[in-house]
Image (cartoon, rainbow, N blue to C red; front, side, top):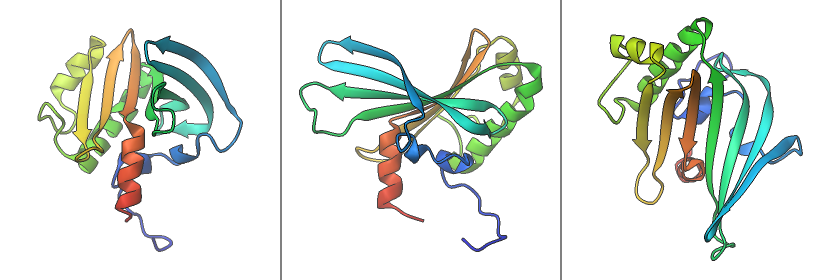
Length: 170
């Protein structure tokens, strides 16, 4: 990229100034939970971000799944951002949805930019938007939802997104 030329993001990772792929490079994250269920265990790690991302998020949680029968295989990783909803941050949520639409197009429910339906849903704390993306074995999902007045932005199968980016550099 040339200096001074704005480049439109091609995926959700490019919306953030913090490089999510470097989450584990420093020891400034904290284990917040560990759950074992059958042949799988899940560990959640949280990191405070050095600044507020997309006007909303100041921390990020990585949920790492490990299969006890396949410990050398790649781990499944989900990324989660959360923020308490207030009318003061609604404009940032609208911008985020519109930016995701610009990057990915129609969501899984064939909805585009922010609409009156989204206005109704957010006021009832029932907002849900989802994009299922990628191809073959590298499918990943960008999921936005609300419950109990908390907005969640999740990247499910984050490791698949990273693999797609590695295999298809810009």
